[in-house]
Image (cartoon, rainbow, N blue to C red; front, side, top):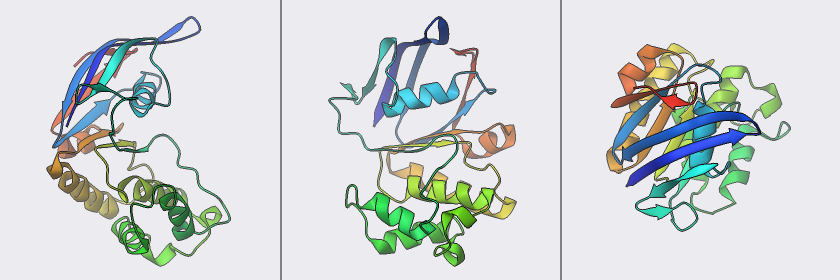
Length: 206
C-alpha cells in the first residue's frame, strides 16, 4: 500500500488552509501528524478520507485516484458522535450493517480491546468523555482497512488504556496498513510512530 499526496492546496473562500502538501506514505508504518489547532491537520485528514475535495493537487492510492481505487478507509476525526439512546454495542452493530464485513463477535472483541466490555450495554448518552472516545476508536478499528486515521485518539483516556491501545495500533501496522495518528502530546507520537510529520500554517515543515 502506498499513498502519494501531490501538491495539495485547499482554500475556503479567501483562506488558504493547506499549501503545497507533498507526502508519500508507505504500508506497514505508523505516521504521526503534529500541529497546533488550526494548522490544517484535520482538513488534510478529511481530504484523505474524501470528505473534502482539494482545491488543487492529487491523492493517489497505489497509483489510482480515490474515486478509482478500492482502498478501505476507517477513521476517527475530531469528536466521536453516535446515537445517544442506543448502547455502545448497538451503535457499533448499526455501523457494521452498512458493509456486513464483521460479526457480533468482532464487535465485542473491539469493545474489549478499548476497555468497554463492562459498559457495552450502557446508552451512549451515559458515557463519560473517555468512554465516548474509546467507542470512537472501537468503530475505527473493528473493520478491516488499508488506511486507518486516528485524530487525537487518546483524549480523555486513562494511562493504562492508552498503553494497551498503542500496542494494538503498532500490531495493526504490521500487515501493510497505513496508520496516521495525531496528538498534541509529543511523547505519544515519539513512542508510537515510525515517522513524525509536522504541519504549521497549512505547510509541511518537517
